[in-house]
Length: 446
Image (cartoon, rainbow, N blue to C red; front, side, top):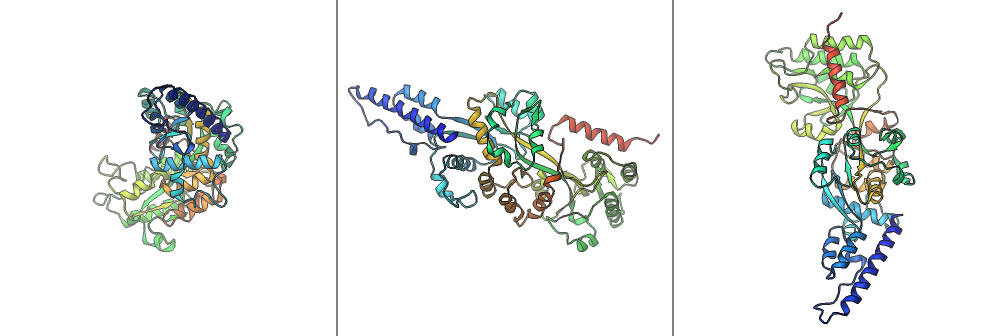
């Protein structure tokens, strides 16, 4: 579809230039030859300059209307976005070449490709924009045509996301998503408002300095290890007791074995009464605390927490804060068997867009095209946000990473059993769940 759209667009532009050239030939003086139009003059970075060089204003306006022009807000550099746009053009026009893919295409060649559309970029957080950010865009000139969000429900309710059913119903890339449930999570009342792009999942972070030696030795735990040693509440309780035995002086050492254990309750349904009582007892026996024992400081920031629950999207942040001291544990089974709790990050298209079909097609390409994802992995580091694409080539690249491969490998094994969490930034529903979990833990027995 895009291939034929480009051809029609280019034919229309060519006609405009022919007419303009004839008009200019009737003028008595011409300083220079009228610029000849060719597809090679159009590039993602130079389209606007080429257009403004035209001397006949009537042609400028017509060309601007004919060239698709969108703005996208993604966690990529302008250079990466430019290369994605060019790869998009090559693939849609069957120009990529045999045995060439996103992992091996020569970047110099890709940079030299010229495309007949304009895509401007806004770089945002790897977890996307919240409702407040999108609202700011709306109030200051317009919402980007395509944007990544961490709160689809809030964005949709605010009227900032367009329904995409008509644009996506015949797009073959949608079938590349590893889970049809992800599409369901992007829908409201039978309408799709987002394209599944990436996800993060809840894990247990740990400071290696406070992990007892026997665990390091028995499970070969080192910096960046991801292990399943904490299989259930009893195993977690055992490790916390061992940490407390290593650091018994709460008053002076102040080591918190697990920060905010109540967060475990927010990650599951069907917790048993014995499990709930165990978590309550952890508070009573100082195995867990929401803050430092002697202040209101978050024990993770004061570096007094041995373990804490957080999202995989925070991996880079905590690795920077604890250089060479972070390892990871799979969350223990609470209630039912372990199923990774993932937060979905979709790509949305603004209802204000003048090119909704083109924007939707580009968004689906970025999120679910194998070559696009392989190129992104070459150029960007957004570890902790994992792709929604069902592609062995993409996941092999992730799991072979020397630093993060074991984390990616662990979640890959569970892709068919994930549970979609409501844990997204600034999501009021999830905040209410956390508050309720805290109340349950702090409640007195009747």
